Length: 480
Image (cartoon, rainbow, N blue to C red; front, top):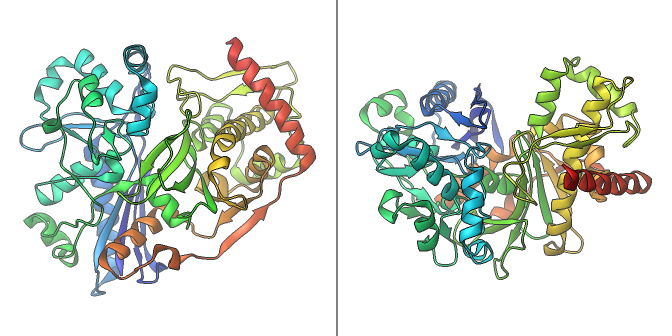
């Protein structure tokens, strides 16, 4: 079996998977945490907290595994996270997250100075606050003393690898989502580096996901002896692992994930440049993904739960299912963490129009969830022409697969059936499948396809109402 470690935006998980890609019962542990949010738009994690969470998860799984044979460790972590390291390999900055919008002004300056279309064609990324060029410019300007301590930049995956092994590399998957990497050339992009104010030696060596590392440092080898001599494969992006884990590795399946944020992603051969509004990242050098991620997803539901003091999830679900589509008279822009796909305006803020004295908390929640679905409908319009004519949309992520009501909203807004993935942890499963593939234990990723869950069919009348709602949302967006 292999161990999968998934470091997400709001929790870390470790789990064991057998050689056929099925989870091993009882070998799972999750450790939650929360990012630090600042009034000026910052969203950051303490790398020590993330590391402790990973260690806690591995402690639990290794203890329960006993003497079972472990073949390797597969890793995934959130895309776009940026962390600075000193000459000794110690993390000297927080991990600046994809939702950190403090560099939105820098992204605007870069857009005015560079040919964004050409850069987008090479790197697959727009000039936006979620990517590294803008973040690095912001950091150099706002944190000059800290900047002088940084000798290299990487993600949390590199921090984990440096801590456990004393050396690290960046996977193609993680590099592809920085805004600094030319996927076709397989190298850091000179123009993007110059725009960010750094040089190649400020980054880690880029390797393929199959280049495992062995030989834990002494303290970690003593803590996890079963993991000391086995290969640890470099971290891949959570979205890449999510596509693999939900069996969306061919153009006949679009992965829809709604976790803290949300995304639609499809496998592509990369022969055409990504259309404006979408990104192109890699699973590895040979497997590319085309997609669009929104900054809003389960975080909008969580914000509504806390701010509006809503009842428990089960009660909310029952009430949401009885409400008609777009029946609340509200128009919501759900940009609580700025906008990513398809408009890529990092400085956008949320807004609600149509409030009245009889508007209740439940109506605001329903409108907010529908607003997220409408933003995903815009992404789907751009993505669908790149999918097979007869394609499935496979949904995963706890924010949506725990809510039949929201799943129906999504199907109605997209105008296409939405099918739940049967896998509760698609990102972890994807990390495990990629590890098994790298080990040679799973020659063909497609051979591991698992059964699917419930399908939600769109209602044509509801879809028509949501088309009108989307037009209203876009008009409101243009006005504010």
